[in-house]
Length: 211
Picture (cartoon, rainbow, N blue to C red):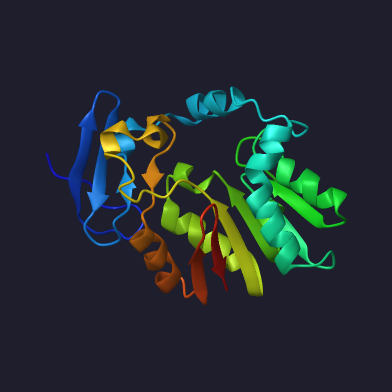
């Protein structure tokens, strides 16, 4: 069987993990780790999966989970700046917390707040919390995110980066069947160079791309 082409950089890949329900390839160029498309949920199955998430915006644990992004935005931008939470899901907690601090933040979600005109506007900052691992077309999605940022704008992402912290076949993060594209540090640097972000900071809990 021929290995699939990487959906981020369109390079060849090599079989990386083959377990029941978990088939992954690793890109030979950008080092992205991804499921082949024939294993993806269809859109209805994917929506039903996300509806099972217990994302209560008033849950203190959920607020703490997103706090690295919220704190970074508050540090870098003032309330005169405009933001977007991309992939806000069933519980748009980032927008809630920032709005309470006086920020203007719009939400967009493919399944739960699909308002296309919000993707035609420009923003000073964009949050993308636990979303990028779900991208079926990661290059297209990152091109969109880059295009929506104003000059000197920042994209704040939260995902689990694979750093060989455990054998991949035992790594918990791969077990979510909607996690179809996993990033390694070289993958993030490839995105930065390809889309000409000024820089990318890979911090302990978040990733920050600056335009």
